[in-house]
Amino acid sequence: MKTLPSSDQLDAIILDFGGVLFDIDYLRPAVAFKQLGLDNFEEIYSKATQSDLFDRLETGTISNTDFLKALQQHLPPRVTLDQVEAAWNTILLDIPKARIDFVHQLKERYRMFLLSNTNAIHVAQFEKTIDQKMGLSYFYQGFEKIHYSNVLGIKKPAPSTYLHLCELHGLDPARTLFVDDSPQHVKGALDAGLHAYHLELPEEEITDILAHLIS
Image (tube, rainbow, N blue to C red; front, top):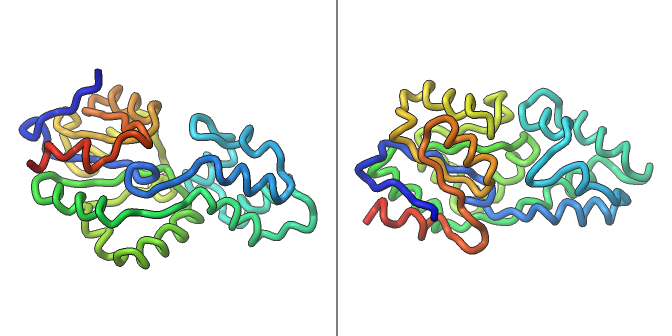
């Protein structure tokens, strides 16, 4: 049975982005790339495991253009880089403003952080969506600091990633909660000594799961 710490056990909360705050669909890129002529995209990329190409993108060690060109090589010659980028971005859906309103409520009691395995291509796209939905500044103001893996240079689920964040911000892992929709990321946080909760989508909603922390 999954348990969550009580409010008096916490000083800080670290949230995942994709899935927890921003709705995504891991299956859509596979469909989009298949329409372009790549039948085995799901073998290259999935929620549980990624090829080195995607890891390099998420840690900022390959440029956007080089990444897109690497994918383009698996596609028919007629497919443009813009089409590859559009297919890659189909994973991104939308973000309910109510979730960020909730983050602002949490921030009144806890130090709030975001930790996302992401990449510069997706950041550019989802920031447009956020800005249209609620204003980018409102989103960023909900957190003391937002960490994207492509800027940080390290990523989940390595326990050292969580400990690095704690060290950067003077957080006690034993008084910090991490929430993610990926089991492997939750395990990494637990191994680092944090409280951690696996948000099971689509059954669970972050605003319901953490509601007791602001009541």
